[in-house]
Length: 315
Ligand SMILES: CC(C)(COP(=O)(O)OP(=O)(O)OC[C@H]1O[C@@H](n2cnc3c(N)ncnc32)[C@H](O)[C@@H]1OP(=O)(O)O)[C@@H](O)C(=O)NCCC(=O)NCCS
Image 1 (cartoon, rainbow, N blue to C red):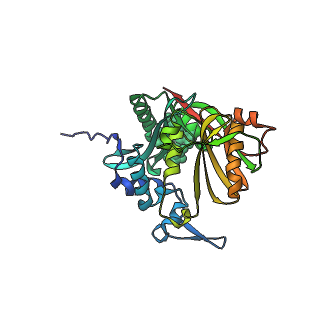
Image 2 (tube, protein in one colour):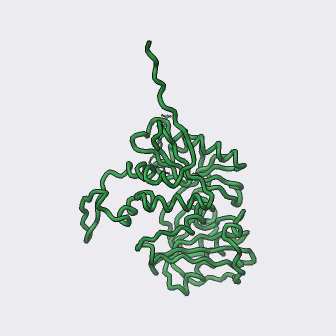
């Protein structure tokens, strides 16, 4: 008698620390060529002969089991939600979800910080199944919105999954100057998470508030990060409690993140400059919604360097 074999079913579960190597394989599958650049010249180098730091350059902590394990550990300890999709016992995709509470229109929000399907398993419905799973998780956890900030070439995938365009974002590069704004220092709170809970992330919201708070607290024992400065100030900006964080690898520029309970983008940008100037930073990277950018014009001198979009799925 012939017994038909059923094809294995895709299943989802939270990732564990010992999944690091398999998750790393998912991410590595999208790299076509491993190389090292020496004196502006590119040399092909086998993966095993690259340092952990070299590998990072191909896509971040997921590129080596060592750094992927630190990343996973941090996610799990901070109660974020890294999921793996398995097919017949093999990990074929990874998705990271970040749940938090933000200002309007997001409310209680679930953000897809990352979605990667192993190259050999793309085009088979794996990605769309993970998005369905993200929707279930978000609803179970009482979220009002599911969001993602896709690379432009992947936006069509998310639109096909039912997302629509939310905020259009503009990336600005602004020379650090003195602008008028009223600020005063606040006592540091017990945690950045509790201070910013429900606040607008007015500057720097490429991903979600929960995602950026995680990223800003992440640290890796790699020499390349030793010189990266990350500083946070708690202050009242035009009478509104606010938190401004900036990260910088050199005096040339810093990337600004600003949370506030009501200060305008203009006042937050001006307050950020007040913090950057004494540190000798020359330029500020500011990411704003298009509406905030328009309200800024004529107020803050800045050059537009790029655009991005937030995609949103209302729940
Ligand atoms: C983008 C990605 C997640 C899609 O996953 P996938 O498993 O290949 O997608 P699915 O097979 O579930 O595709 C679902 C639908 O979206 C379409 N689609 C998939 N990727 C697409 C893309 N980049 N652009 C447009 N449409 C896309 C498929 O054609 C399919 O449409 P159909 O139902 O009409 O046939 C996957 O290709 C991937 O991991 N890419 C590399 C990593 C990456 O860029 N991740 C996203 C970071 S924001």
